[in-house]
Amino acid sequence: MGYDAKFRVWRGDADGGDLQDYTVLANDGEVVLDIIHRLQATQTPDLAVRWNCKAGKCGSCSAEVNGRPKLLCMTRMSTFTEDEVITVTPMRTFPVIRDLVTDVSFNYAKAREIQSFTPPEGLKAGEYRMKQVDVARSQEFRKCIECFLCQDTCHVVRDHEENKQNFAGPRFLMRVAELDMHPLDVAERRDSAQSEHGLGLCNITKCCTDVCPEHIKITDNALIPMKERVVDRHYDPLVWLGNKLFRR
Image (cartoon, rainbow, N blue to C red):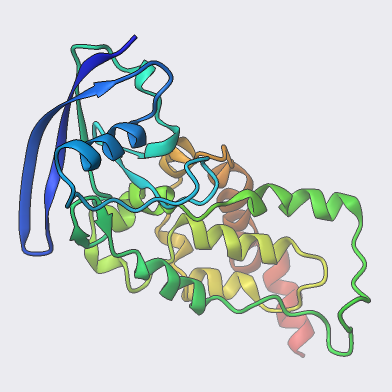
């Protein structure tokens, strides 16, 4: 059985915009993206929204619903009351292109800054051998669909534009941590995590974990262990002494 849902949707572009109110039919079993599509079909054909799979696997329809970063296709209408006003806005951390579509090129730039998987010299593709325990350690991080909700909610970049140059954000620090855990990767990840990707700016509030639609424990399983390994490298007195002796 359907009802008239009250929506408040941000409309505008890079030059500015505002929230506009709409009343639109909502049916049982629908998600917020269904309502946005119905708005396009019946009232606002010029409403811009990015989407693709509608199955929570492509990460395209990222936005903010009632101020919380979410996938529109995974946010069920049944989680709201019928008299509730549902506010849909673009991700706040990234520049608006138009309506609910933002420019997320920042994330692709950060991805390019990370050195790719680097196997030992002379080891050819097809000769890689890993134990299952090593595969399991990083398998969780491979579930990332790059919706960039963790990047959007991270206050280090959300509230401090000046940090964007020196901070990769949780998604890409997780990638660095994943590669550092790989037993066949020989690149120096710990120094670069701190000096190039801004690991020290992360204060582990776990807001990135809270919004991850794949339920990846970004903070507990990637960022905190990476921080611990960096601390061991730079501040553990035994490691420091070993490095001094090794240099001699």
